Length: 416
Image (tube, rainbow, N blue to C red; front, side, top):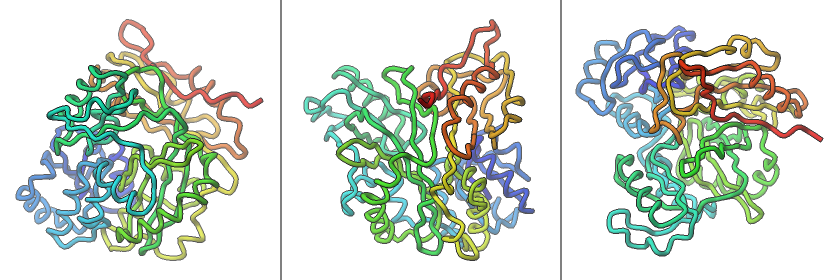
């Protein structure tokens, strides 16, 4: 039984089917993308445990896995405990990793720096005068850019606090310093209590949407900060993972990077919509989706010597992900996706939106405005600028009047 219905979760469902499993998708929204691939789907909220009791019994569910959705992770753990099924996360681990505030405290306990915060009471506005602008206001418990605002003055911050409170299930908000510096992530795989660094990447964000959360438009693997990260931060993270008791699963942590060091700011203890697992399968030969599904069914992530196949440096090869962001409007025409998918070096195209779909103003500043992610590999690096030019030349996404809906996509610098 797979929890969640977004397009990225749909890919997990497809893999489960190819492994010969019956994939039951549970999600409250009829017509959710992941349900298109399911053996059977139920329009049930994952919080409705009594309704799920009936599903689990009727479908003879033998394993449960959470999809690509942070808010569902706590319910995944509770459901696994309810039915005595394998679970990669304990309630203590989730408490530390599924809230930005708790994550900051866990990092502090192990000497891992996080983005500087300002103490503000969102309800009373106490502490508002202590904020140094620009600042970022965000819910403690949302992902994909939901509820986040970049604020450059007091009035914008007050509005940002209201927006974040409305989006937060726990009605908790954090205010952080706006970090105008490099951005990267580290991606870990946990097998039988041992943490393996599996990938690093530099992230690039759009500058086209002032005041909104800066959505990612590209990622370059491995990160140019990898050696420094492994030296300065990786050992402390290993201590933190051991202290938290993490034994299984996958975890992505994002970092800001400047001359002063690394600042952790966003963990995701689940498979990622960003899908670094596609490169791990291409370069290293293991599929984390299969590993997580296998764990859900058996309690074991991997049989064999995982260290022997795990290479976060990709043997000197490189990869680039291009995110296509759309402006608000309704898609009337799409052209070029098939040509792009057939281009040399393109290993996958994850197509999220299609003709007839509407991008509302509320979706801008979040990953819901992502039309597609295009995954490319290069043997030696330096080719991503030419790839970007080919992508832009081939892709058309327009509204019914013929206006271009593409807001932004990653454009790497041409090597000198």
